Image 1 (tube, rainbow, N blue to C red):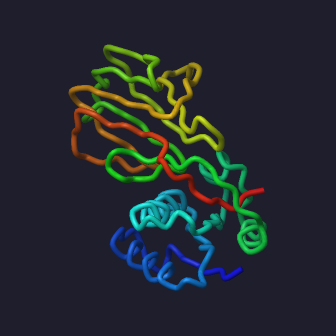
Image 2 (tube, helix red, strand yellow):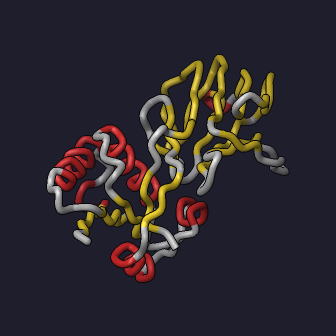
Length: 208
């Protein structure tokens, strides 16, 4: 099984460089699996960018393996090892088709996202998980995570004592002052709508 490595420290946090590197790798028809080697700080964000590049290239047939140096939100969600065991799994493990969660900005989610109010204010609007309303009015924010299995994604309100999750194929928030946080990084642009949903093609993730 031809196996290629993509190392975060070689590319920094440059989406264009990451997409170029992914494009070059998958141009080789012999490459059927990419090992994504992240740093401790930005591992999940880097992995998400690699998956987004494969999605945009329509090459989700390529298997992906996350080689995380330490535990992350994504390793917890997908039940993945970290450190040396992650490298072993990447090289010899079996890939499974799992839901790929993306948003309407073509950004992939592997760890955690939040819908927040701009400039520290409360979020004003409403959120639905599929057809079930999570809230309407004002709240501190909404937390969103991908799921390893169908239906694919879940959402809950951000509270001092977090409540239960609602699960579905999509989490959609509409409002007047939404900012989106993905993998711990906030996009400063205020939007009126943001949706995280299951892509129509699954990813092929190497996992236990």
